[in-house]
Image (cartoon, rainbow, N blue to C red; front, side):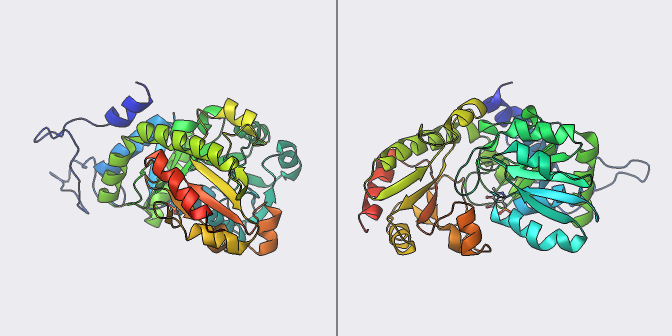
Amino acid sequence: MRFATKAIRVGQKPDSDYRAVVNPIYQTSTFGWNSLAEVPPVDYTRCANPNRHILEQVIAALENGRFCTVFASGMAAITAAGSLAKAGDHVLVASDIYGGTFRLKERVWPLQGIECDEFDASDPASLEAAIRPNTRLVVYESPTNPILRVVDVAAIAEVCRRRGVVSVFDNTFASPFLQNPLDLGVDVVVHSNTKYINGHSDVIGGCTVTNDPEIGTAMFEWLKMTGAAPSPFDCWLTLRGLKTLEVRMERHCSNAQMLAERLERHPKVRRVHYPGLPSHPDHELAKRQMRSFGAMMAIEVGSSAEDAARVAEGFQVVQLAESLGGVESLVAYPPLMSHATMTEEQRLERGIPPNLLRLSVGIEDPDDLLEDFDRALSRI
Ligand SMILES: Cc1ncc(COP(=O)(O)O)c(C=O)c1O
């Protein structure tokens, strides 16, 4: 089966009682036993639930992985992957990383006795030098947040493999439609299902996917022990969204490419960060590594934070909000949203100037988006 068919068919067959084509929502905390001699296939929803299992099978199939565990949020999934490191271990986190992962590295993992450092994911040689004898995990993502650098996923995974370090890759920005990091040698893929996988901005969720049976078991055990399980209804909604991932991504990507090309010529836009533009520093790598260029972009508007605020507040179609990956276009201001924990200096080091806006391009009519950008940009 190919991608779009897997999303619709894997693990999904008419239910046994009524042959409902869409699986029912098993909104139950517990399942009955016939007798004490026969342990039921699912017994208690924190540990097992049909809606979660179907979703796990589909995500595993789309990521070309064997073991998927679905969690109550993307952060719960990243925390689960982080549990592979223990006190005394060393963890390397890419310097250009989602703000929530940055917070785990700054505030949570050190309290557990884990030493944390950053590395520059755009330079696999710097990773080589940063690995220590006790380095257990390397955590990275691509395209990066918010300035959309594309890193060589396979080159970093290869360094990790050679040095006996587990690689953890956050594939949220690309979605399984645009790249499959396990095929590039990564050990554990994580997603915020909240974003493209669900795609409708109405669920918080996450997952881990791996081909390693030991890691797969560890992720499931972590879910069971910490209780970070999603509800059956959230799994059902996520699966409903996931079925249309391919068609959504095609439209997301074509809208984003069109918008990036137009904004690059706009007099009020100083710079467009989008891997689909030949002017992007990683365009060639993105062409090799990704099936298309995605729908996340960042733009530098005018010259100041005030200019960015005027534009961000001037849209009628695009919504000012955190998050990404839903059908609706969103604009975010990283210094007050995803990257609020960082100091101005830390943001500047990562190439995040005060006039930068991050865009999650939705699947609206492209002409409505173009008109909306002209409207918002006319305010500066
Ligand atoms: C790249 C990335 N990873 C992880 C997360 C965390 O996901 P969640 O909000 O579902 O916990 C986010 C949330 O914005 C994200 O953008």
